[in-house]
Length: 274
Image 1 (cartoon, rainbow, N blue to C red):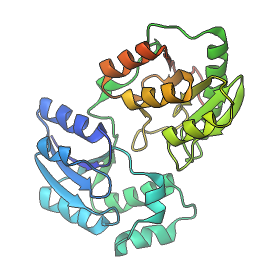
Image 2: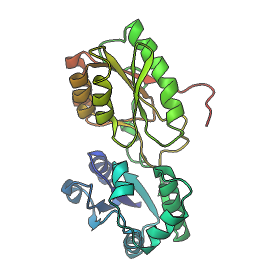
Image 3: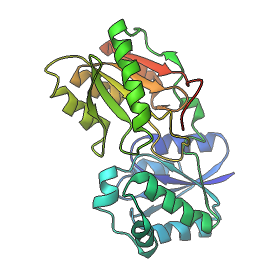
Image 4: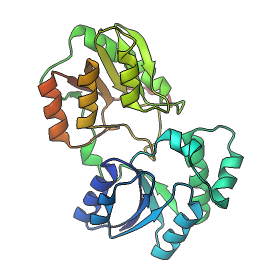
């Protein structure tokens, strides 16, 4: 099978390319100059570098390569999408047509253009399902009763937040919502939250349960997440099982255990509002 892979930042694109190679798939990387690491070149069958706003060039590459299925792997910072992007004529038309200036609307518009060109946007985690978080307690330490109450409370907020396309993470302390993630990202949100609670322990919840797709912006945790949690006094992390990528799993959980952080994978709700 041949796939196109739009590579953003972080290790997500590299891991997806490695998985494609192991599975015998041909994966062509279309790397975003403003975001992607040069490491993708070592694992892709071929690599093309484009700027964030070059939708026409993306389509040309897919035509040249015979790509009919493409996935988005890795983060593109939300702030960059709407502040530093220099759109070509195709993307300019998409941006001009948007009723709402958010990532979901933009990606939806781009997906429609690609579909009209015979290119289907597929699930970003298609090649990495073995890296999805499991359910239950994932670390040595179980959450305390206070931590569990905070996580349960944060889960309800994060589930609602995930439907609004303004972020996916929530910081909670003593059943109070301290901060919600927006364009700044999870790390900056946690640091902001820590400045507001005067030393009280924080809990972090990353949610996507009510989003009915995994085409983009899939929640990701890794060793870097744990490092910022330790820095900010965040003692517990809740994620949606089967919907959150765990990068560098052994290192991530090892760092959590060393820092005394507990990680819980929320099992899917029996009834879920989409």
